[in-house]
Image 1 (tube, rainbow, N blue to C red):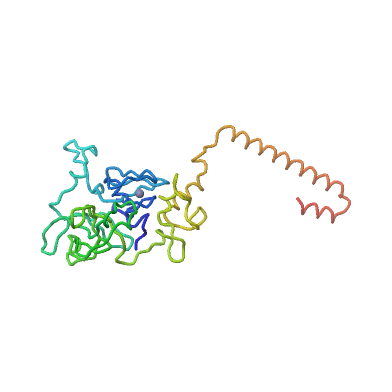
Image 2: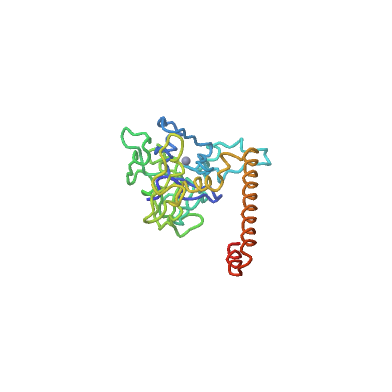
Amino acid sequence: MAPERGAVAFTVTGVSIFGPEDGPGGDAVANHEGEYEEDRQEVWLGICHGHSGPGGHFHYHADANCAHWHPDEEAGETWRDYSIDSSRSKSDHSPIVGFAFDGYPIYGFVGWDESGETREITSSYRLKDGETGYNGIDDYEYVEGLGDLDSCNGRWGATPEFPNGTYHYVTTFVNGEGDLGFPYFLLCYRGEADLANGDGGEGEPDCSGHGETWGPGIGPPPPGCGGQGGGGQGQSADSGLIAFPWIDSPPDSGAIVLSLLALAVIASARDSVTRFKELRITESASSTSALGRAGTIL
Ligand SMILES: [Zn+2]
């Protein structure tokens, strides 16, 4: 399995791609699409199906083609002209959107079927009866053959960059029945992934999603995933707090004055100590061995 929460891949533009679940444990995209009401923690995905976690870790939960949509500046277009529909062309094979941590490419949602026709590629997951995505991954079931992709949301096949075929993941808007395209990017790794940066690695506590789960109204980080070690998603937010404690409470002039006063007290105390030592040296000047000892003290 890929980490349930937290980074599973990154885009060709260097942005993190997260798994389908957000902090409270729900499917972030299903929530965004209004499948259920998120009553545990407010989660909002922007127009690009991405948002920032604690620590400013921006990430995507689904592919809205923002990595490859560019405004036609000659025609006076700006990002205000972007819309998910305007960016969804189904006439050409999609470019590579990103790479999973096992190294396989992730393509956009348009690919070639077995007969070489260009069409939208679909996932093979669907919501279990009566579920909405509120419980995240647990609410979905994999149905072989429902869509085009395997249980990791990938497949083997030819692509423009790999005409002889390669394993690759596909970003999915819809499943084979036209419903939500869960898991949107990928749910597991077909290859071997280096997760040292993801879930802490073997024998380490599973800190995946810690960055997203650690927020107001949400429980504390799991044991071993705190500020001192652990590794994993939330590490960036965590170590940020440790490295820059003044971000939350910048020093005011009062604190600076107090610090200067403290320094002055320390400096004057050092003066007295020096004087005291000089006094001792003077008193014991008759004995060279005592002078040596005093010198050692100095
Ligand atoms: Zn998120």
